[in-house]
Image 1: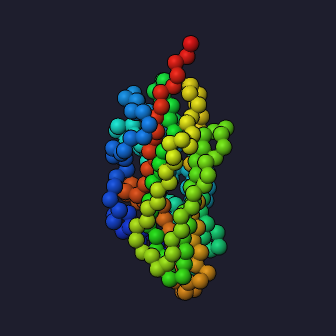
Image 2 (image 1 turned 135 degrees about the vertical axis):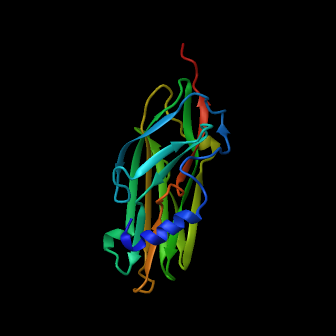
Image 3 (image 1 turned 90 degrees about the horizontal axis):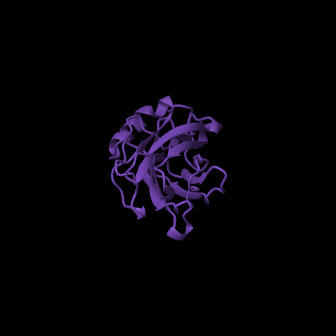
Length: 218
């Protein structure tokens, strides 16, 4: 995180309730498997997430998992470089689920903190896909200054449009996110930023599983 904003973002992380481990959530599709699920970060690329700056945790009831970032922040205005205004992150997750089950992502909740001066705008965009498959339609959300508070967005997929991982195959699950801040219309002496990071694990993105049992092989 940029030093000029570290104190403010640290305060922001304390304002947002939550924890590094996801809690029980609404269920989508079939009941989740009771066996062990493991998710590890295979690769991380992007200006908003250097290797080692993203962590994953699974809900105890296997209904969801979280991704927590520690250095994901875009800013514009006074003291900012042109490259600071756009940050992106692509994470490839290695997901192991119990035999006989497959999963899709029914809903994704993105959270963070934004401080936008009057005239400034923030943008959050996200999409995801399984290795070898087409990416889901990227969904965007905008925020306008003045704004100085937690932000949260939710991208939900209709049950008929859910894309499941191929049964019996191991495919990376890829998450592609981006944040932008535009301060061209704001006071040039002001600084605006939008963060999806956390210094204490309290700000995270939450992905809700939709489970389905695979057909028996003959």
